[in-house]
Image (cartoon, rainbow, N blue to C red):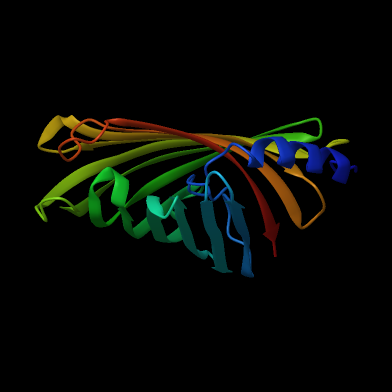
Length: 257
């Protein structure tokens, strides 16, 4: 099995790191529980001095713990940047999820989750939510490849607080998602994934959020991976004077353990 060369890695990173923002929440690709502790972490620090002073910092991680049929996953992501001493990005995301595999029937799992986030430039002082649901898992094998599919459904209760007005809104939403993961283990191993979330308010269906995350992860070594990602997020009813749709793209070098 071969891995992407360090020369190719350097060329890709050099081109992409010079232009990208680092605000894409890392995706948990694991479909089944692994015994013990595992995860990955990615860090980036970028700066520029002279005609323009710019500083960017990013830290993301996925921490997993598996025991028998239970799995705990903690996902965190923090991004901060400033240009000429003016802050132009400050956002944080944290998601904790418990999964009991085969809870309802074989390949049908139970999930409980809690989440906290804020984004100063989306007028979001805080968003707190908790909920649960069920997930169906399917897998298809090919020559040196595998396609894993997850379908999820559930509900959650959230409380959002605006940064500008300190106003607070609470909503109960449905949580519907599909996750596709294609893994190629031939000469040059890689993963390609697509995750789509649709979260309408139960009492107001035209009030919805949707998120689409796609990416390619190339194995540099058994522990290092280079990931190219895009994220599209739409909020049909955001707080005032905030764009409804955000699009981000980026590259991340991560270490798995």
